[in-house]
Length: 190
Image 1 (cartoon, rainbow, N blue to C red):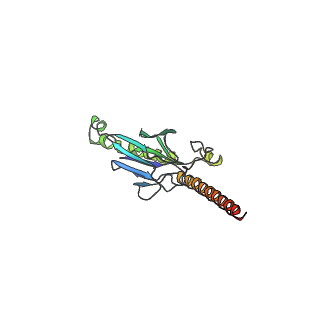
Image 2 (cartoon, rainbow, N blue to C red):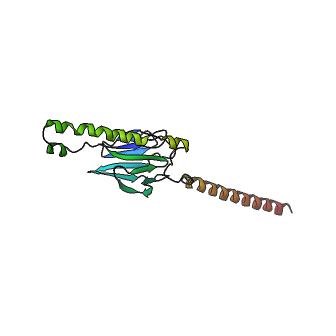
Image 3 (spheres, one colour):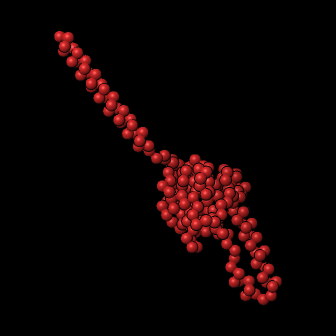
């Protein structure tokens, strides 16, 4: 079964198995996979299972969806590739069992039992790659893998802008009407 593993600090190792045909990922609770982090949009992206492919579809997120640091709107995510949602990095891991075609080629039932221990070092290796080495700790941690100097931007609120433009126009009309009324009052007094 394919699964997404969070690589980012603080959520490192958190896993979500992709069971349904469609998985939504986002900051709010109604998503299938909730990632409560400010740089992740409320409904950031969808993960669609199409046969053996895992397709990622951005849902017009504020900070974008990236596969191996390339911004996407819809693209296939392959095992081992990095998916970035805002500042959160995830990796697609394929947890499917090894096909049973290789063990029967060897003779006897003892040969069939041999591949089972071979899987364990793979999971140990995966766990070890998520750790931090002593040199990384001494140098201040591992690099994030994306440009942290670029500021994330918030979408502009057009309704607020139109409100203020309308308020200024109404205020100008009121001022013009007051000036006109005062000039009429002054002309009647003279």
